[in-house]
Image (cartoon, rainbow, N blue to C red; front, side, top):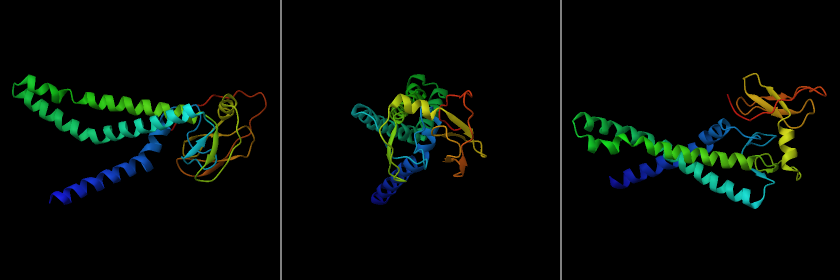
Length: 206
């Protein structure tokens, strides 16, 4: 019986980590404001190598580990915290307030893990502000360019998909097709008139 429970817990942890990496993590990252889109400019997928210095790459690795740890701790800690709070309220109702304090203070653990998650997402957002070098999904490649110039370019053209997702076209040429990360449809960038006001854009999902 013990071996069965251990295998069940291991399988559950693997499925949760798979869900974290493949489904939840991209959606959480898209909800964090970015100076530039965190995905590939062509296919919208993740796993894009950047023209970033070694220090930024090291920060990205540490931020990725912090984000994964904080998000997993938050996800797995919610039922534990709910149980501890319920026990603390029950103990306090019985009159033993001193014994109920640890259970009532359990939500502070979720606050700490949430702060670690936000810090990790911020570190990854800083790394994603560097120009893309290659995409491991669609095998797209881009030459080295200056980070400030890249940020000026990615903020230039913003338009909306039919599903409501805000999209950004690289550069200003009309007709560039961009894949929507929400519905998967391809949309052509609109024509931007010379001298028209351009709105800086922080990439996020509504």
